[in-house]
Length: 412
Image 1 (tube, rainbow, N blue to C red):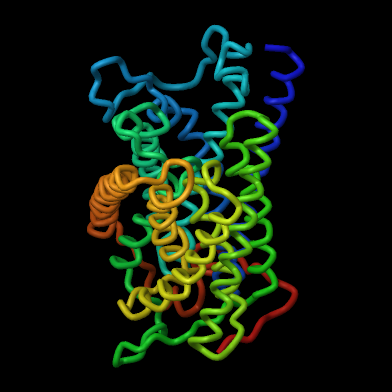
Image 2: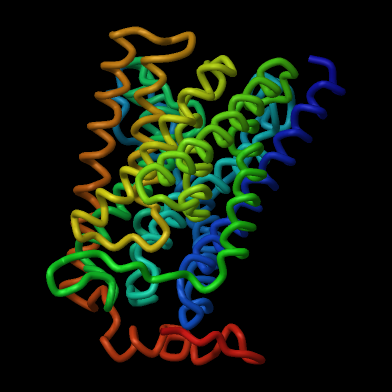
């Protein structure tokens, strides 16, 4: 391979890595925007912990757990290549990864993905989880559960040998986080004041919708690296197609949610519009490289409808998800994974079944392991803060500081 092409490929992958890193800013903005002022420091602390802790865990053992190399005849379920990271011979040459990037770039790009699953959980459990309990869960889930699941497909494990397809992580990233979020909010219970005595949900408005809007736009930008970088080279045709399908699905998702929520609730709800965009992005992620623009629009549109219906369903089940993480990341992640068998170049009944098997296997593993981890934490140090701490705000009780020291936002 020409050295100039190798360099161009690697530069694109490093840029994509930076865009995925920038997504953590978007997640933080979205989460603090959709929650109350008194918990802002707590949410920012969690998000900073996730990226710092996640990267260190991925360095220590996560990368080698996710890409261990399965020998011929191995069942492809679990393997480990050792602690720490050390570039292999030829890892800095075009001989590595078909000349798409260097080994160091590979590690950093994948490391940026690893922390995303825990960020999804952060939004769902916001405003009532103990910071220490969340940190322990993050260490175990990002350090062990996410890499094991990733190895089954991206690491050449049994799902990969079966033919299961997930281009950039509708299931391997988003649903992995979504299953944990679902289990966590079921064990935590709703925030004080979220449900009336007869079980009807009440809105708890976030303190900065402009910040939440900025967060979604940052996430959309970051998704160019999330999906575009998953081409694993700067291939002009495939990279540009992926960016087109990603953007069209996002736009269609927002439009679908906007229209459906207007029909149901008779108002133009900006938060539904925003979550519809995210739902479209999650939905296209599994097959962004396989779809035509028309198919991307349909996938995104359906994801937008799912967002509106899914958020209503979560409320009806008396589950409290302040940012809609379960609907956006879990339900839309499942939809996007199944869509690979319905649309695009792999569409067939056989592929649809393979996609379904992958969703069920990963769902069962993530839900059960999350339940075990969280139940142990709940039974020992506890999951939820006290009533007093929740009412007065986690910023003061967990961190001893206020995010907005120069002014106050009055909350009802």
